[in-house]
Length: 384
Ligand SMILES: [Zn+2]
Image (cartoon, rainbow, N blue to C red; front, top):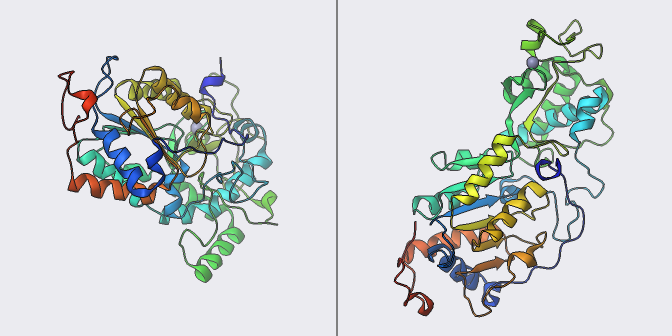
């Protein structure tokens, strides 16, 4: 039963998006539908709580200068042959780790200098209006936490701001790791300093993937060195035949079998921790609506949350430029005349739609009563 917890990329093409309702094909139509979606009471035949949970993906950070994994045809955007490293490769191969940390070393500066964009700030504003109570994100860039520290955010796939030892599970700040990588790899540090001096430390100096790594064609990855876990090096874990050895400069030696540092992200092929999976389920179950932003739901761990919301009878809205995995099923069975309360599908970029939605809600924070609601005596106006 490993499948539901594992992070795996999905490589099939997605069906072309169909706007729901049909008026959501224009920006004013999309804003009107989402406005109604957020302010409608939960369906009366289900015993659902109020409030909206938001699920986000890599597309939300594109406007921050990070590239998306996928184009609208489901192919990888930056490089068609790009394939992220898998967890089992990272654990098994010293060479694979050298390559990973070299690319991560080059990509870190761009990620560190990037920040939240209008899409993240719109989520913050929706929360301030009482319309969003929780965020679940697949992104590992920590931009949600920076944009809205007071709104709880569950990082489904971990975070790049720390590295973690696979033996003792202790974390270390990624910034400290960067300093160690620079110290252990002077020629790489020199290369990076030159690139930054020539092109600036913006997100475009060296193209960075959402997982914070960068590709430099022809780079001699086999020369790269990375540190061992300082805790395991000082106090090798008792009870197991753990060997942690380093060279004269402190770089992890292939004579070791422990003390390997990895990014504190859930790598492709790695299981999501049980407590994170449970917290994600609780985030869905604790809301009456699900707003999906800027993700094609390529990973099963995200797709299954939307499936869970659908199975619970929660209205679902999806704002994503391009097709979404299995989306037809999420909008099956809706009243063809509904105008947003039961579901919304918008094929536009979040950094266009969300700020427009926030402006509309600030102008008009109350919902127009719908005929269908009048006989039920349910709550009116805003729901929280
Ligand atoms: Zn350790």
